[in-house]
Length: 447
Ligand code: HEC
Ligand code: HEC
Image (tube, rainbow, N blue to C red):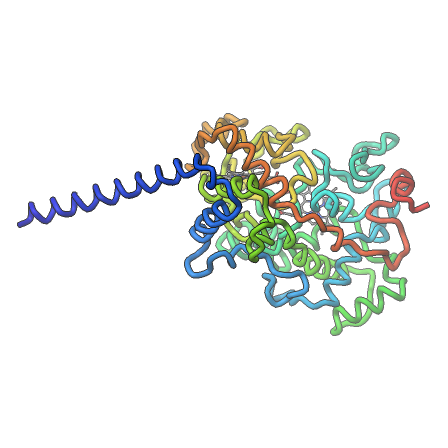
């Protein structure tokens, strides 16, 4: 009896395996048929895969980013409830060059803003391997450092500027995730104690407040502008005046974080496709989406913003300006060897708007990143030797066609063409923005 039972089990398993093989072959050979390249066929196939990648029951909806005005649908920190007034104030402050009042060299007074390094035209990244805030000259593709001052007078970091787009979906901030007390930091006593986390907020709020000091910004100059008095009173009705003190750095940070939460790439072709517009993506973008959702990519780029609030080792090289030796990433702050070389999994929308890529700026194009994941040979051998490389970092054997398709999905399928809707028309200070240095003023027609 036992033997018959196990034989039946064995036969069932064989049948299941055969079924899987046959249906897979069926898919492969269907690809060669002429009608397998139609929008409706590809669209149906992608739908299956996207549903499979979403938590059960949520289906395609899981990946739909809310409208920016639909504040109740946007993930928020309960300590910083979203209101239209706060978002509006944050939008101005994020671009406000009048905040830049603490430069080391007075000649750089009121010349830069958050948006000097995170600007809409660059997908809220910087379009530079090393973004320049205070002490940068020029705008967009021509921004360079002021050569007439000492290096210490320039605001720059030795790591690539990540995007603040879709950041509402990320609990902790920065490449090693040190900002924020929730999500993956909730059970990290060491990180909870960091000074940056003294306000016990989510990463986005924490980072916005901290960035005020890091990037030499302050409120004294805007405190005397009546329009800001009014806007602060509307955004924070509990305390209706601006004082040029610590408490105000916090409120500026809260308003900026509220604004950042509304920066959603919800008009990208992939988003329109998710919402039912079958023709929003080209056949090539659909094929690229199929590669994305059927290969390793979606194992890490998992959540609605195609990131995940977690850290993985995929062997990207460090920044050429990082002279610290080796950047251990997450391991630097948890002090656990098992976290060495792990970096945050970044969101993937509007990456085509600026380059380079990776925390160390080690890829010039998105195609290079795709080819790298296809080959799966780490740039940083120490990451290999440490033994922490993700199991999903392995050769994918994609064809050249699939590499092209996946690149197209990233470049245009995930590109919201209208991010300028998040940029204010003018500032209460009347200053030029996002930069107010002499070179930018000319380029931006502010003079
Ligand atoms: C000099 C350029 C520069 C300026 C100015 C700047 N940032 Fe950044 N920003 C960076 C860099 C570089 C990082 C990555 C640092 C790291 O991970 O260690 C970053 C990271 C961030 C992140 C984390 C994003 C993520 O996905 O982890 C947020 C949020 C952010 N900045 C918001 C702001 C705000 C708000 C301001 C203004 C108050 C600002 N930044 C000003 C360069 C800049
Ligand atoms: C094992 C997890 C993992 C897998 C699998 C994975 N990624 Fe990533 N991806 C990451 C991490 C982590 C980073 C950031 C690494 C760093 O900068 O050190 C990253 C970075 C990127 C970047 C650069 C983004 C930026 O802001 O610079 C792109 C583009 C990207 N991945 C696309 C893909 C695609 C396409 C696939 C599938 C072929 C894929 N990834 C597979 C974890 C993964």
